[in-house]
Length: 220
Image (cartoon, one colour):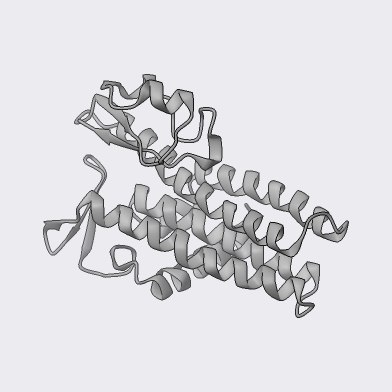
């Protein structure tokens, strides 16, 4: 990302953090301890369950926004180019926000090379999506479903960044995969609930279910 792109992505992510009420990324009385990967509000630790609720909120509410955007396209209210600009903006913002929940701030996330790499990858997929729309491939309902699938990929970004950062902390040495999906791929089933060295546990999104993975990882 160029410097102007980084500045715009940071601005957009801050606007979305306010809209989503992600207070740990906005409040001045919040600190982040990188050694344990935890936010603190007035000295009190923010629970991992609260962070996961933020992730769910991002996925759900931004998902509705991209579906509305895609519906506007199908109804002729937007051109494909207008839709693509809005879609790219949402993709970039959600990956910055989920990265920020793992790394401690929007500023650090938007400048992180792993976050930028995830954004670049998703934008390339979105280029293919836009071309399929231009070529009139798929129905409006299929386009909406496909648009929403990009939201799950942002939660995967959190899992990847969380595991990378935890692996660098001497406090944590082991990790285990926790399944959330009603049905899981064979890889997730095989690795679930077994403690192992952090760097030996396959990252979220790396097994057969890939970007559809709903697991999360616990550390000790």
